[in-house]
Length: 356
Image (cartoon, rainbow, N blue to C red):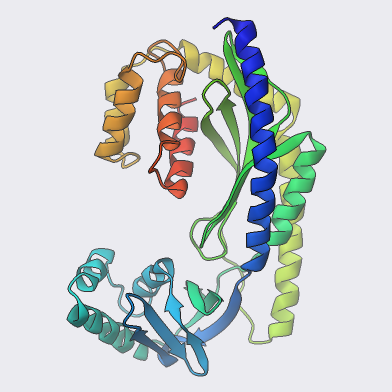
């Protein structure tokens, strides 16, 4: 395929992404609006956990009842309290059947009966999805996302992917422009927003690049990483709500400024220069992949599958050569394979971005 054909194909794929992405983003925003959490600050000593008998756990805190505990919230419950329960221990008990689940419930109730701390519970439709410190900084996703979209649209951006998962949300936006940092490498540039209302990851923005021939994606460096810790929550609900709204507005303003910075033309050109350098850097792929496994960035299974992609003969889905650029794209390609969890896919795209 010649360079002219690749440019036309890139433009066609970008148009397809825009067409599908608008609908996805609209649906995800509706889900986000419909799943705003209900908050309650409760003393640990009044919590009472139960086995619902349907494969799920429940809980009560005085008159407040949780009909279910999301697995993420259960993990948080086990990691807090006077004694932390290791995840392997919890999984082992849950796998033992009824007696194991009964023992886990008994252990949790005894643990929290001696707890003097307070906790923030966040629930949707009666299901507890977050069990957090009462110092957790509650920031509303919805106005941040809405402002983010308005800002990037002003730069010529179009949403291309969005997911509203049970405990986290992410949105990807691409600029309506094609770049070619390396001859024959047709790319698009964008920005990703990620947040969790339940302590399942911090709030961040990252630049990302997309290779349009095969849609391999890679996330760049963090430009904002907001840890949700702030002042201790007040028992005065009205005052607290005012504080949260002011805090959210401040974060919206910071996000707007950072979008302007990331999408500035000279910033984009600097990232394209990094891609060009990565495409010229010869590497030992086995050594690099082994280091990622050793550093717990890849599992052994993931490393093998990525190596298989890298060592394959394909020069359409992956760029040619024995370079950081090819390895980055192999990781990005694997991130989009069927069966890869969307949240894990984001982590792999970030790892791909680290390569360049």
